[in-house]
Length: 371
Ligand code: NAD
Image (cartoon, rainbow, N blue to C red; front, top):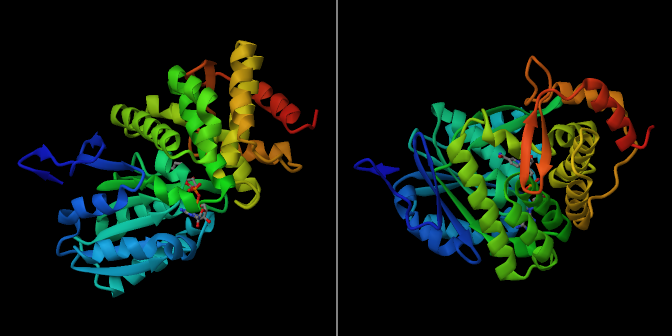
């Protein structure tokens, strides 16, 4: 996506520069039509595989398909189930086979339209198909717009552990139209906003304070407040990924809440809790760990309050030892043990590799109401 070595951003609002070029990121209310037109050079003359789900396809698929058909060589529809079950090896294999049969080539493009599950699956399928084809993310959940669509992490789940198979590969472009969120259930909006709280809590005090002031308007769907908060969260993620694309350092902060969060999701069979809700519980637990290691209680309670305002559902009864075993299998774990992202101040987090396993298990028992 470069001409004469100069990155092309197609007039997008944000851009993510990476080692293979630039990813233009279109964002804002009603931006999709213009963005898909601006990206015409990406579709021109190529086979475009449009991957979506029954629910998202029904709501938003026709307009996207029409826009692609106006510019692409041809459009081939692919489907994955709604929700986390899309992220399976079986679906990836099925899609690769469908793409081969449909005549996919090295210069085909995959467009993933949907939530983070479809984007993670679609990105992985594209990253491996014929050793890698271009893909474009069209995130339709709040969570996917602020987080999953940006940064090039693709992946699948195994029954044993979430996101345990995957690859880093940047999308060729991202189009995040906040008008798509109008059809999203309120519970999904609140869960997605937990990832916004996460990024603010570890990276940006001013943004955290803005959320404290504006969260209710954003939840209620006030278009300007919502679009502005989403764009700020996206911009923060872009900054982090540009500095640390392969998660060796700064990007690890974005795993705040995810160590226990992923274990909860897997332990509950990816059923009872939405991803953002599991992350919310993971953040509450990490705050508890941090408090036990001396975090200022007022900082702890501000984070707890903001997470709590988004109302994560209560946890069911859980087995602490099973969760500990899952956390040990987490993809973020190193041979030396788990690294914890803990809040250190409002808007500042740190990666801690010296958290005593005894503290992790005793605080987990208390967190689960078992001690
Ligand atoms: P999801 O993709 O499972 O979608 C949730 C539900 O919302 C689905 O039933 C979907 O059909 C429906 N939906 C999507 N868009 C809709 C719309 N506009 N209107 C109505 N319904 C709509 O959930 P999610 O929260 O978007 O994504 C969670 C996944 O993202 C997890 O697997 C998580 O691991 C992954 N993730 C990845 C990254 C990354 O960097 N790659 C970052 C964060 C999360």
